[in-house]
Length: 265
Image (cartoon, rainbow, N blue to C red; front, side, top):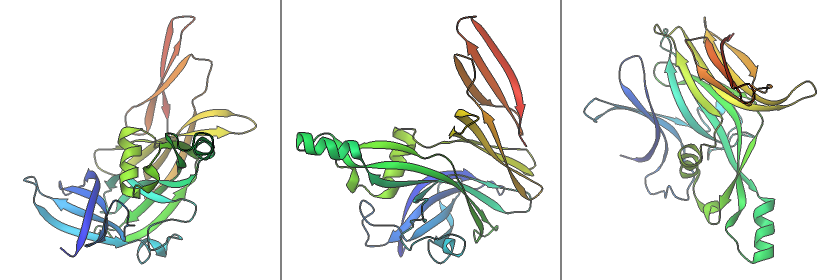
């Protein structure tokens, strides 16, 4: 074709087909160092054949809703890694992405000054916010909204500062488990879904980890947050049925395990 497609994730939509999400480049671009021109979706049949392809430009399509450059950088959000897609009963498609960007690493710079090189890169990765994009059934962008969360930093090994965004994103996702996105729950008739992710709050009334959800119901998105810091030695939040999560808390001193369900909005 006229474009070079670099797949990242796969989701199954209501038509039963698998859709690959990825970023696309000009045919002669080098995906190791060049910036992508946008993102696209490939429909793949059960026998692995390409049946359809749709493409969205960073600036022309997503740029209608967010401050995004032609190279895919979204204002303070950075670059997008798309985690999952869900199609609801009216045919609309929602895609959840998470931001990442390269920033200067004080530790890496100090290491290079002190050792003349060292194993730590002079740049690090900052994981930023969540992004929810709404498409129509033909993958035309209809809405896009950023949901802010506390940023996380990841140091990089020396040399990774030259690696392209799409490759870095896969490393963050699969090698380092560095993203905050956890999972997506969808009910059977596709009238509701919840996108779940972790965060950390530094407030006056509460300082600690949180479990967060973006829930779609009746055409609207609501947000929910559960504080996960408690007197328990360890706390876990597991998927329950749609609209609920199971909170499991272990108390080492009492050798006690408590479990209860929390309802999401």
